[in-house]
Amino acid sequence: MRKVKRLPQPASLRDHSDRWTKELLNEINRLKSYAKVDDQFKNHYRQEDVRDTLEKMYTRHCCYCESVVGTSSYGRIEHLKPKSLPQFYQYAFAWDNLHWCCEICNTSYKKAKWNFQYPILDPSRDEIDQFMCLNLATGEYEEIGDNRRAQTTIEHTGLNRESLVKARRRIAIRFLKDYKAHQNCGDGRAFCREWDLLKEDMDYPSLYEKLIERCLQLTANNL
Image (tube, rainbow, N blue to C red; front, side, top):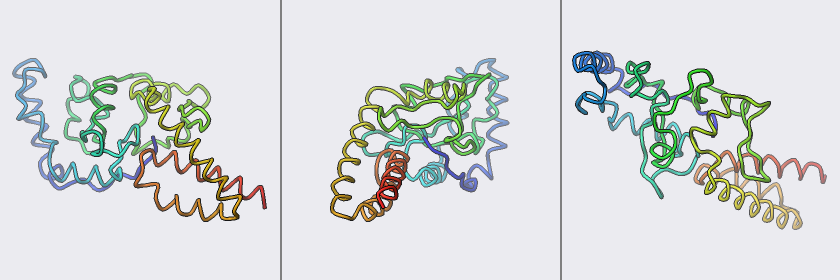
């Protein structure tokens, strides 16, 4: 998980979100239930320009696990503040509340979870590296200083689920092995430069960023 810069609001939300929100709230009030409201009032956020902008904002990666979305799972427009909770009905079409997510993180883990005391981290607002870090040896995310918001994020999104931990650990082991082979041939820096160009096309780009940083430090120490 890493911080991204939020892009300008898509035209569909800019032009219609206020009206859509008013209509949704009126329907909830009329029916006394969010669940009973017809999908036509709930799903206006599923606009092509919203999807395209979020996909670009996250460089096609899931906002949580950073897997490339669309390769092995479908993309989902994620509401950080769950739209089905009464406290957050008004954020159903709020641009700042929308993110890009893989199907697994969205439907199997995050769902409608929310911790009001220690809310999940927002990848477009929070400096993720100040709250938690990725352990290259274990492949697990760890909270910094027992940070409770980091704990919430890891738990609610399944960031340390077995499949992710194993995948990250395999990548780290292979990357460091390949770096050592290149370093022995005298081109460790070139190896890092090449991977710096490739990382955005890979699953878990922030993992590659940390690995590149580690290898550059090792190279500098050997000079």
